[in-house]
Length: 68
Image (cartoon, helix red, strand yellow):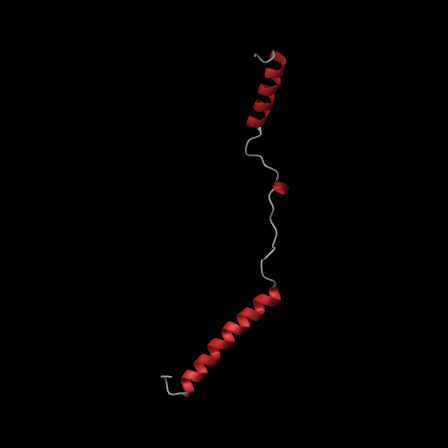
């Protein structure tokens, strides 16, 4: 089976057009947004718990004489 000359020329033309446009991707095609997997309230709560627990541990260690 042979392809027709017109179909082959159409495919070659499409390929050549893609070659000349290589690397010029539109900026809107890339998805760039600030969607974080954790919300700001949950992140704040997490930071509060971590810093608070470390402060409580420091105070407990200081009041017990160094070695708990």
